[in-house]
Amino acid sequence: MGTLCTCYTKVVMRKTSELRYAGHTTEQTRALERLKGLLQLQRDPGIATQEPWKRKALAKAVYSLFMDCVGLGLEQEAKELLRAGSPTEAAKET
Image (cartoon, rainbow, N blue to C red):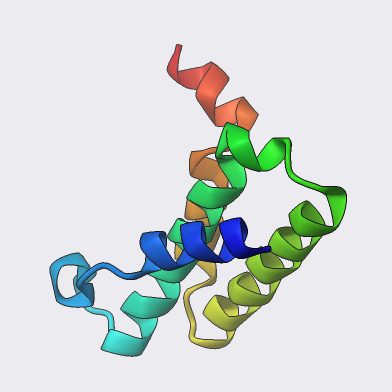
């Protein structure tokens, strides 16, 4: 699991101040950026080759963070992030 943790840490360890969303608190911004980072990690082709339990753990982390976003009043923003990298959205762009 070291590789998965290392990748996640690199994705999350960015300056939150640079990523501030208009009208959101720091906590809300961090939650959205963490969700965005996990989704990027989940969509990484290298993750698809990982052991099934690692992919499952990542999926649970994404779900948990999505629910945190909902609790912070960010349901629409979180859904947009989920849709942004979905296969159907990618097909619409081409």
